[in-house]
Amino acid sequence: MRRILRVLALLAASGLVAGAVFVVPTIWGRPWSIEHFYTRVFAELVLSRPELLSRLRILEPWGLRWHNDDLDDYSVAFTQAESERLRRNLRTLREYPLEEQTPAQRFSTRVLDWFLAVQVDGEPFRFHDFPLNQFTGIQAQLPDFLLNIHQIHDARDARDYVTRLSKVGLAIDQVIEASRFRAERGIVPPPVILDRVQQSVERFLAAGVDDNPLHREFARRVAALENLSDRERADLQASARTQVERSVRPAWQRLAAFLPELEAQAPEAVGAWALPDGSLYYGWALRFHTTTDLDADTIHRLGLAEVARIHEEMRAILAAEDLAADDLAVAGPHDEPASTVVPPDLGDVLRALHRDERFLYPDGDEARSRILADYQAIVDEASTRLPALFGRLPQAPVRVERVPAFKEAGAAGAYYMPPPLDGSKPGIFYANLRQPDEVVQFGMRTLAYHEAVPGHHLQIALAQEMQGVPFFRRVIPFTAFIEGWALYAERLAAEQGWHPTPMDRLGQLVAEGFRAARLVVDTGLHAKRWTREQAIDYMLRNTGMPETDVVAEVERYIVLPGQACAYKVGQLRLLELRERAQAAQRERFDLRAFHDLVLANGSLPLVLLEETVDAWLATP
Image (cartoon, rainbow, N blue to C red; front, side, top):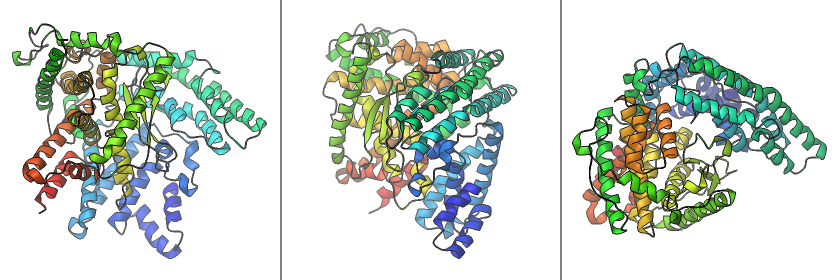
């Protein structure tokens, strides 16, 4: 509350009386207007999360930097308090009569209502996640935050970094407490996930103090600062080393000692169905991530149908390129009906192509540099083509970087980090280069289109740059919209002829088929009680991905139920809406105008996106 007061008081500093009339109800009661309530909800969200504030950088332009020496609260008590805050805010939001709001306010209210309500509906499952996992666990995310989000421009930033290092031990202890709390309620990751976490922790500890990236990288960044004396640099570097030695490493050692305790309680089952009220939890997770009411069986069938369709397109290209093998079929995987059979050779043929030296880079750091340069060239080329398809383009640039080496093993093949709102950094497309000799050149274009432009960077940067909307609308995340758009962008690039060779087009289909297989595997694991091995087998036979990638993907689905379903569900809804618009407008249909409409409101639940498109079509 004190921090909220400081920010809102700053905004009201030009008029003390008016500011008091505004500030008091905005903080402690029901704000006078719905716009003030939007402000409070957003302020409560971000001001309780120092790491999010450092990521967004919305206070730094005002000279406010107090949050940059603190870490998030990972405790059970914080999670419980957040749950109560969500319920309170939803009740307050619904006290504002819709009929008294402008059309723009009504739309923002519905967006916020959906965002709050789905989380309130998930309150029984607020402890069903795994704070310790190989994908989003603190052992990977906290070092990543300190290395790649915490910016160091001056001595104060450097001191704040050191202070954050001193608080790492508390954060780790909170995660241990939270994991123990969940374990007492039967929420424990399976052994394979805990093994991955243990490996990550051991790798971090094996680096020692001087080679620890949290010390080594900080020393490099401080050495590059101007306006510091040699003594100041040495003192800052020594302070960071001390904190790594006295706070960080002991925290990781406590984590390493705790993991066997957790593993002793770990179930062999890997699906959400095995958790308390697991089926209800998974149903909610699907709704949360897809923003639809599609159930697991429907999504599973949808995935099987999409896999079959995409396989046909891939086989046509393979045949045309004289790369296909026999077209014999075998019984379908596991419990699937005969209609889902696939050629037994498809996965093997694709995997052979993934090992074909014509399409690969050599191993080593020189290859990593070439891959990053080639990705950047693809992004730069795509950027020149955007004006033909989009009326609005983001001002923020995008850059390609390597996923930090310490987290490569458990990280996705790629991901995107939005630019801070103060423009201090570009958007970043992170490419995982753990094994550069497995980066397939004919898959690079579609990955770049997904993560950068016209995918994540275009959509998210445009949302962050929106004007005339409540601030929360610029950053609110709906997985199906965000990931659905990025997958739609992959298809769009193929439709527009951005793939110069049939093999590049094959790479697009491989990527789309991989997302379709996710629908099958995610629902297989969490609703149909597939084992990890069954899921891996299905992915190997139907995607052609290298086994190391398949294993990492399946283990990602294990710890994030439902999230992987958002991509295809969102893409298919976007394609359906585009087809609806084309059918309604015929020769009047303008693809550029359709894209601008879809992106004009930022991230939305799919139901509100559909209403927006239908209203546009109903306008004469």
